[in-house]
Image (tube, rainbow, N blue to C red):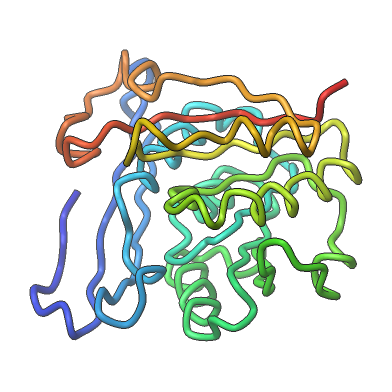
Length: 228
C-alpha cells in the first residue's frame, strides 16, 4: 500500500493492490481519496482493507450482485465489489454530506460511477432512501461497531433489510476494542445469527503483510443472517 501526501489537513490518496497467488496476472488496484481531519468517516481505517480483501477473495460470487455498504466513508470495500462486477450502493449517514460526496469521488476516481449509487442511510431510522432500497444480495460494513451505542441502531437497519431480503447476509469487519463488548443481546432481540470468520484465514495464500495491513489490531469478520 502506497500513500501519497503527508499533511493530514489536506486531501491524500491511498493505493491498495490486490493479487491472486494462483494467477499472478489477476490483479486489482484501487485508489481511495481521504482526508483525516474532516471526519473519521473520511479516513481508511484498518478494518476496511481486511473487508476489501475478503470481497476480493470472493470476487467470483459478486458478478451482477447488489451489494450495499453501510457507513461507507471512503468506500474501499464497496469500490472493490464494484470493480469485481457488483452493482453497489454506498451509504452513509444522511447528515454526513461530505462523506456522501467522498463516496461519489471514490467511485469516480476508480471508474465505477456507472456501477455505484450513493444514498443516505442513518442507522436505526427509516428514511425514504432505505424504504425505497432495491433488493440486496449482500450488506457489508467495516468498523461500524466502534461504540456500543451504535450496536442496536446498526442491527435495526440490518434486520429490516434482511427481512426484505431473506437470502442476503451482512458481512462486517470488526476491530476488537474491549472484551466486555458484545453484540449478543441485540442479535437475540432482532432474531439474527452470527458466525465469526477469522480474518487471517483470507490471507492464508496471499502475499500480504497482515500485521501491516491491520496495523497490529485484532480484526475479525462477522457474517450475520436472519434466524430461520
